[in-house]
Image (tube, rainbow over all chains, first blue to last red; front, side, top):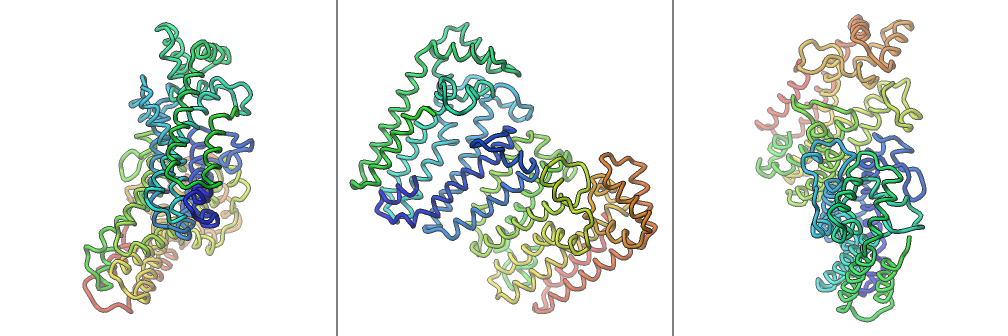
Length: 286
Length: 286
């Protein structure tokens, strides 16, 4: 996305390689830390760093990786803008992770989480969380591509906005696939098992459920141990509602907004490719 | 130390405030992470971040703190040099922590540590570890003070060298106080309880012990559970040797070397204060 954004902003692809690596490293850094927080054992079909090395060493690996990231930024084109964007994005991702944890309804003993848990999230608070957790990195990808192309602010803002909206569409679809998907290649209904109320499909379903069903769904998500039967029951409740269709429509709306953001750009194969990429985000079934 | 170094290099104290805060933040960042790794419950007489907030949130706090550090660097005088030094120093501290863990003889399950544990450390490998873990931050303090003063390279090198040597003296004394100290205000013989062979007093004592006693001391440090009686036995073995005196001499030698590094600086009250500070590092009994 960084490379395509750079091209769409009139820059040369090779100038986008280092900024693209910055985005990838921010992502990897957050994943190693995320797996420490969630005790994740498998990532992209392979054992996580914490499983291979141990928790203490995984933490040191991630910390060292953060410092290597600074070296990469230092040597990147547009390093001042890239650094500013990288740091801002990492702060947002970290805060998004905090909000995601606050939306978990069970399974944690952290005093901070127990004191501050969000018991009745609005869709707005959900969007705040996923904006920070997910869309911020997509936004950074668009912006960094523009910076690599030495594009004017108007273009950088447009590509950032494209990324932001595409990121929201991506996460809403990710949530739908988690709860409603059949053959996604991931563990089914992981969010329900992990007590996450910060899932678009669940939050939208809540609106359509009876008071009684809503309470039951909340109780399942808030149970310390979520059994297979409870997962099946929760999924069937969500699937009785039009949550999946509604979420697809929400994602589609963000997708259209994302494409509209591209309108300030001159026509190019890069611009078309960005548009296609956004389509695939919503069309994907895995 | 940053403020004194800045003054000794002919700079104004107020220019050193932000670089000094950078050093303090690097230190705090490493401590929050260190407490996660060591499951530390008390730090400076107060509950650690992980105890107050929980492990997951403490990790996010430390990550966020790392990004705030970048903002501070960005707004610091001599920000280019300060950033380069900060990043290099953090890499060294992280690697020093890795080596410190590799010198632990029990108590960890991380696959990496079990595979790579250092069973027979030399004093040289000890110095490599403490140079990275401790002296590197002292070195950074001296260097950043010089950068804040816009000092020439020769002066920055001298102050960095002063910090490095003073840092080694500090850590050797810290190790001695841990094992041989009586009223330090800290838990006695924490390094023995935590299976750490990376302690100067223990490593020097090894040289003087009989083969049999050496094996016994190693066995105590390598025991999964180190009882009070075992701690007392280990301390008495170390105290039978001239380890404490030898270590004080080693520290004194680094202290003298540190002061020699200051000889390139013009006479000033700041230079004298740095010299006094170094003296106190070795003279302290807490």
